[in-house]
Every structure is written in structure tokens, then in C-alpha cells.
Image (tube, rainbow, N blue to C red; front, side, top):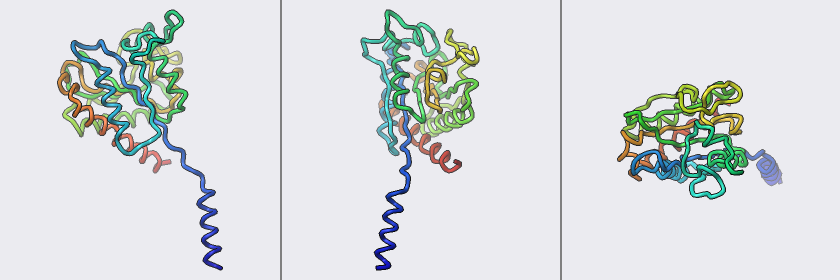
Length: 239
């Protein structure tokens, strides 16, 4: 009787224990197909994102990608730092980037990871970007640093560190709060995810053959997922 009572109490305790919320991750691979000669950044970055999503450990993961859509403008091209390609509405249509962020916000992600390739740097390297002046800037920097270190360790890519989106000097999209140049996908006024990073993986010139190799895309994706898992585990331990 005593054993039965203990067993019932344990069952009640387990049943009433709060379920841990599954971490929600949104991946935003580049949709740009016009960033280099015979080079599709969209194909490369989608390969990396798909590899990451298919690698353990698994979270609640979603991909937002406008490629091929006819109901948006710049569905397969455009800069993340140009008003005309991001926040502008053309003929009543949102941009590919705006559509992607709208879909992402619906998922209420904990972490948002944008995947791009750099160009014109002449460096076979990897960079991490975070949003200037963000309330979560320290956490964003820590995650970006963890991810690019994981990629560099798993590949021949040089780790070029974490930079603020305000330092690029690219085009004309600006954050409404700071007035600084920024990446549209990282702007807290657009992207509701608390943790947001953008990875520039390789250079479409210096890393041309490397990036187009599916084996390397797989390796990079797996490295990103391993780094993400380590960061989330560390974050849970600290909290």
C-alpha cells in the first residue's frame, strides 16, 4: 500500500511538472540569385540552412524564403541594406525580405539566423553581424561569435569576427531608433525575435568553388547547428 501511494505521488508530480517550451528557431537563407557570375547565393545559403535544420539536435525550426514567389517584389534579388529592396512597397507588393520577416514574426522565434555570402572582400572567411544599439546586443554578439567560431573550426574559412551592421556603410536602410545604417533583417522594429544574427559565410569570389560544393554546405550547416546547441545549453545553464 505504501509503495502504491509513493508511485501515485510520483505520477502526479511528473504529470503536473511544467513542460519546457521548445526553442523556436527561424532560418532566413539569402534569396539573392544575382550576386555573382554563375553563382547563386540563394542556392548556396539554402543548402547551408537545410543542412543545419536536418542536423541534430532538433528544435522547433522554420525557414522563411521568398524565392520564386510572384506576390512580392525582389523575391530573388535585392540588398538587405537598401530601402527599395526591403521596406518599400511596390505596386501594392511587399518586398521578399518584408514577406520573410512577416512570416518569421508569426512563428514568435527565440532565435533568428540569416545566412548570406559576402562579396568583393577577396577573403575566404566568415563574418558575423549584429544590430547596433539593440537591447540584446551582448547576447547577439555572443551567439554570432559562437557560430562563426564553429564554422571556422570545421572548415578552412578564416574567422573575421563579429561586426555591427552600422559599420558596413552599405546603401540607405536605417534603423528608426538610432538613425544608423543597418541590415533590415536585424532591425528590432521589423524583426520581433529577441536574438537575431546575420552570417556572411565565404566570399562569392574568393570562396567560389568552396561555397558551391554541397559537401561544404553540409559541413557548414552542421557546424552552425552544433554552435547553436552549445550556445543554447550555456544560456540555459546561466539562467
